[in-house]
Length: 333
Image (cartoon, rainbow, N blue to C red; front, top):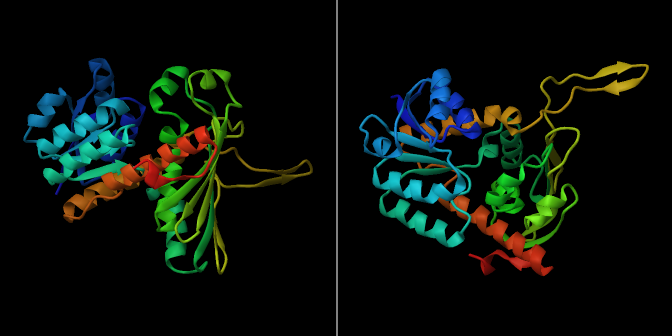
């Protein structure tokens, strides 16, 4: 069975998903929609398909599933539209910036019995999968603490900051999902500190660029997250999980893994420079999982509920920063 896709949004993340779909033998890119027709046609020239409007895609009989890669403020409306249209839905995170709006959207998904997968791609990174498999196999015993380091090479432009929902809903939300994924428990309490150390304009827009977050579950397990919008040495993505019998770590990735030793010392190639190169395999993996779930009539994962939970942690984190105290996730959801 070949799953027939429509891509909504032909920007940079749309290009990533178009590549993943066209390289999967069980998928075909049939149509592309974008507010800017020329942008869509540029993508089509590389990956195929034809330009269509969103309404035409919703009404089409030759489309099985849609990939929503449009701006965040359109996600919930599009999920509802295509749920009613009977299409399977993959949506980039977040579903919306408002917990109330996400809840309303998920009610529609449930009422229409629609398939919805939320794009937390890091669950499908081969290195993080190996980390999870090691934990599941019991090799490090019971998890006690996790450290996640996630630092971008540089801050996004102010235009993006204005609509992003802030660092916790835009950037740290991936780490919140990864914490839940690895811990296997829900987060009960959040304690966070955040500053503006990279760019004063980010602060002027009401956001932060440097943050540390401690998540705690009801059983006392902890996850510490370190975020920065500036890592001069590359895209810094590391995870360490400490358990009762040992530790497992996923280190930073490079285009090639070599080490050169000379009289001047030891050197290694630079890190990947951003998410579109670091997580190529993860993006391909999540599309493959989406297709496999549909083919096997299995629930899609990460689900809309996963999206809601990560957003709630983000909201609790912002509340913790603003109020200078530990915040229970139950206060915001």
